[in-house]
Length: 201
Image (tube, rainbow, N blue to C red; front, side, top):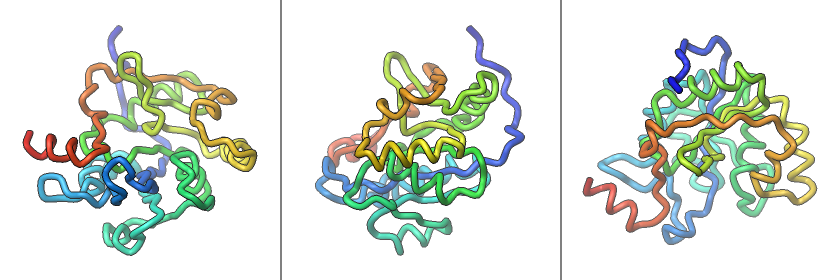
């Protein structure tokens, strides 16, 4: 099946870079600030993601002043204890000035340049609550586009102790968007060994 013809999205979109984790698998360092080929990973992400959206927020829970130097508003989780990507999405949805919100992680420096356009096309066509990227048999839940209207339900889910993305998705109308033609673009860097490997490529 051929990909749909993409046109620039007519709606304004807030983009959130999720950089709120502890980086445990990388030795408890802030992954977004680790350098790859002369630039921090969050810089690589910004270069690819920022042109696709109308506003960028960086969700971070440490090194807030450093993240602020990249020229975008930095928003920490409202929920303490490094509660995971849903907590970052929650804060981003609360802070966004636009009704559509896209998210990407800080440790995927090769993300697709047409990510938001393709997610928007599917979200609009299916009138879904949330569009999420998928390659092969794997969904990539932190690469998504959602509506700000999901915020009350997410707030209630988190208040009830929910943390798993798939459990929250169960209450939404979700459309998965295939990116098999760009599968490598979703490579994320979780460990120091993976960082060294990509540095050499």
